[in-house]
Amino acid sequence: MSKETVLAVRSSSKSSVRKVRTFRKDLKMSRLITCAFIGGTGMGTLFGDLGFKTGGHRSIKTPYGDEVMYTIVRRGDLAFVAIDRHYSTGNFRQADQLDHRAYMYALWKVNQFFPSVFNIQYIFSTSAVGGLHNTRHVQDGLELGDIVVPHDVKDFTRGVWSYSVKDRYVHPTAFHRSANGLFCRHLQQLLQENEQVKFGGVLACAITGPLYETPVEIVEFTRHGIFNLLGMQTVTPEAYYARQNSMHLAVACVVTDTPDVEHDVDGEEVARIMNLRKPLLADLFVTAMLDVQDMAGFKCSCTKKLPVFHEDLAGDPADVMGMPVD
Ligand SMILES: [Zn+2]
Picture 1 (cartoon, rainbow, N blue to C red):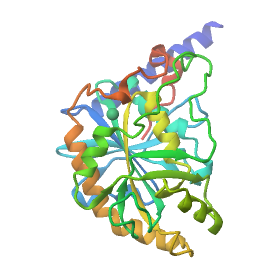
Picture 2: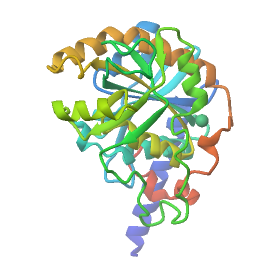
Picture 3: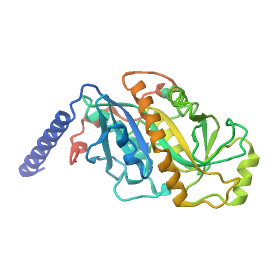
Picture 4: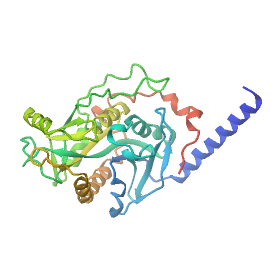
């Protein structure tokens, strides 16, 4: 390496370190940020009515090809990271185009870079789903607008939900962790305490999206007897990656169509129902986050194993370059 190159690298590293220090100072808060929220389109304004302010977009590099955009949402008593999964890497991406690895990895990485600001352990997410009206497993069946906290998930999209063993980013032997309780029992219980929320049932991530099931597929799912909710390919990978991050994750689904009784799914109707449920969703997540935000080091089966990443990644100056930005 020439002398000039060495000096350029040193100067660039110094400026990156300065950026990191400024970032830490900017976000200096009375307590660490321990919660994250992952939502779909239109969820960005979810918390405004509860007095939360949303900061500017920040970005963080990932080894998965994309920078991930995130925001910090805060009120006097609570601050959390929010990620819009469809815009998390810039331009809008449909459900089947998302790289869940990038934004799930970002939640781990901010903890490494800014330990005086973040210790993200608790992830809450929401997803629009079809709900089977004639289900036997959820109390009173499912109606449009219901918010349901499922107890398990089945993936039909045939993905291999695992961080790749790429360079030194993950330990080759770090995987093979149980999928029992992929939705954190503790967080799910907190969401369930809201009496307007229905609990139970199995979410089938039935289709990659942005498509819907055909009538015969709906009949098949209904006859199968164990599925109650039909969703696109988003929840399953997020749940597996949270497990590999050694983080707790809970999901609340909003029933935006009932395909076993109404076959005419309409995108505008989905958006209308999601909008109607925003106040309840916001209240639900904020109440749960207030409950868990100070539970440092809470352990359950989600955290039985350490994150799959190499710890030395956090100290690599190459990864600090160009981040964070507003
Ligand atoms: Zn847990």
